Image (cartoon, rainbow, N blue to C red; front, side):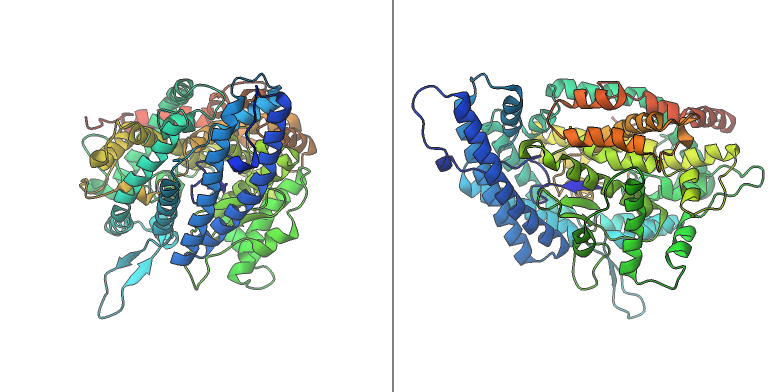
Length: 623
């Protein structure tokens, strides 16, 4: 789940600044503030034009994958990067000039961009990025032919469903291995992408691309890395208890297929291709029901409500799912989505072409051409996803009145956290309010509900952290191309307690089987979002006047909660994120306390269950 800047370079550049050096004639004498302001005004005007061109090309490339659309999108990206480079170089004239705070911030954000200055290398960079994006989107696993029938070929969207629903460990292993065959051909191109990206970072004063990415958080790269690790240490005990409980239940279910002497969990048994979220195996790990309570069937309720007046087409059902998200936001005071959203979004997978189904939200014109790109299924996961993706759109629309340099999230973690904080408000009280369930479950249902949420929210934490840890090591040269896979699994074992289900070697390139690696989308934002969302959620619950256990709060229908949220969204990237966060939550730092408060009942229950089952938390990662 993500929002899109330019998918070719996959949001390497948070903001596009597009002005060629010749647009700013050579100046004699010392620069002035007036000249700096004129330079930036022209930059922002040109940025809008070239950025929109690149966005439209990227949209077509991801929703209609062909060699031609890849070439068109690569060329649009190439133009944007070349002009960005020219502007960054030209802006150095103002480096030592004392500027007003807003203007100084614009120049600071501009300098976080950079690609190789050699036009041939820029062309190669954009072509390589487009090719990797397309290789993932076109990726298929073809099951062997049976009894003379043609092989059945499946993309990740079909495999996702099978991984979620199958309970046959041999079949799960087949799907896992099958999908991971798409990525070895990416390896050489990815290594070249790293080289080209690093060259651009070096030319603009950064140690490497990882250093550049970590510089975009109003703190030093070292401070940012330490902030992530500090927060993970706060949450690791909760994760380890969840891991131990799930491991015990999987061994009960699958026996030898799940049991390992080192305490690691085989990656193919967790209901998700990347073991990043475990909610799909809730039926395996669910606690025994008490007091006759039975967990409600959200997928069944959605299908029943959507098709109440007759079976809808797949497209109309997808749009109906998106309407749920829109109604939540309008209930707290946001305007409905524009008509063009319903006309131009990709709601389902087309039958006639390859597309990137990975859910994303797009602001194509930096105004109100808002879209989502999804392959929506009527199920509980996509119900949550539409709330998430439309959160990006509300953010994009809220900050459109800012100068173009500031039309972005306070940091990229904020952008991911907005929709997730709203998704936390998808409580039984909300589902009853909109007619998807008849009654609110009793208090004893809190543990099952919290467990279901934790299987996604808590289980994701180490995965959200290790993706960019791997890339930072790759960008810095600590991990060489010859050790890509070895380093990948070392981190997955260390942080997640997950092991590959089969022996892996450097003939594999398992990182490439996860979209954000070939797509080159920075991933620390998702770890940040898992923390921020609970901070935002608690702030909106407080604003709504809610009193009670945090996990039961919904602020659906609260204009006060919506006003608080909108104030934060409107600020965009106009000030350090710490200031924006403090206005929203009263805290100026990443804080795990609201997340720990939310899951406190579950944490105690997990410790009790693990003690009773003699399931010792922890594992032994290979050295």
